Amino acid sequence: MNKVVANAQAAIADIQNNATLMLGGFGLCGIPENCISALVKSGVTGLTCISNNAGVDGFGIGLLLQSRQVRKMISSYVGENAEFERQLLSGELEVELIPQGTLATRCMAAGYGMPAIFTPAGVGTEVADGKEVRAFNGKDYLLEYAFDADFAIVKAWKGDTHGNLVFRATSRNFNPLMAMAGKVTIAEVEELVPAGSLDPNEIHTPGIYVHRIFQGTDYEKRIEQRTVRPRG
Image (cartoon, rainbow, N blue to C red; front, side, top):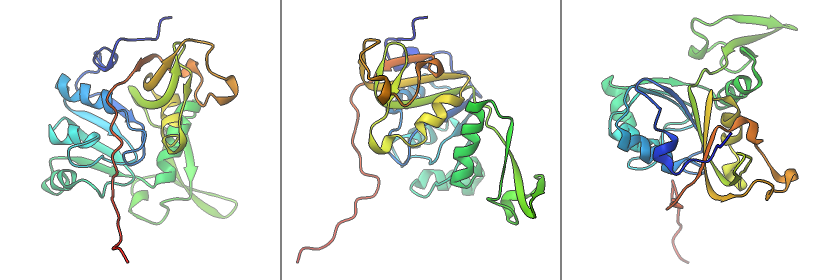
């Protein structure tokens, strides 16, 4: 099976309106920039996006929000995007906020083929409204379902033509979990190498989880929050 596609446009070509997408990354680190840009150009609408965060104004998922292509955001942290805030407060955007560990574990459960998990996070809060709570050994746990995503879109530092992926430093965040969890997983990489070139001991995501892979271009190394201090 040939997993290599020419570019981001080819990789996302069959993503249709109202699809549910997982998008890897944490803040602006390890986000699938090329695929996000291709989605903006495609004009696809009604997307449900599962991501740790919602990007920033004018970059990352913020581009999809700016073009009104996102119907629902399922996220953990959303505090860096003014357009997201505007759409939320105006009722244009449906939002589900999830504790970060629960978000990660629901991704993991989907990748492992588990239908649901029980977690103590959220018990006794609004997060638990309408959900089953069950006691184990005298402690309450909340039932949370594994995600059901049509596509997982991730970004890796290096990958081979069989789809094996290596993530670099902090970009090894939500990317490996999400790569396991999509019905179709798309990986963009900074460097695409022939099969057999990667040290098997350094592979973070085996190629069995990856359906399409391509070498991306023009990656930006943005700083989400630049903090400086005065001289002296």
